Image: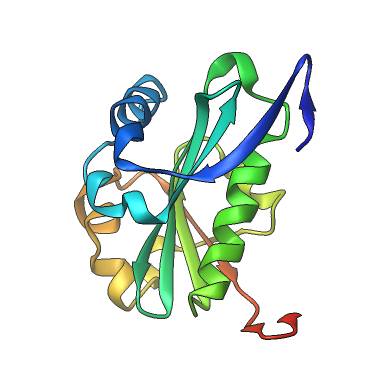
Length: 159
């Protein structure tokens, strides 16, 4: 992976052993830890020299999904980790048959616009993602809703 000043990072699936560090990273980034234990199988972590310095997760709702819990340790921000984590989650979502990916953010809409998401009216979001805990109660109503249509993954690759 890309060099981050002096260290290389690797992206790996999260495991149960990573939960405490993931929750610590999310809390320090002022993100909720609620539901994280249940979605560990859909989380990716960024490691530098074995230490978790970033995380992102996918919450699945049929053909809809939520990009959640994107957090990078402050010392490693602006080095491409958030982008790599988010791109990996987008690919995972597409491979799992998710066609509509949403997120809620407070202040990172410019970052997410840079990776293809568009701001949408939160009231226009429907289906199972709209009734998810993230949309219904965990994120404040002031959070910006964003959307990305995902390509259909095929055996030959993405189209």
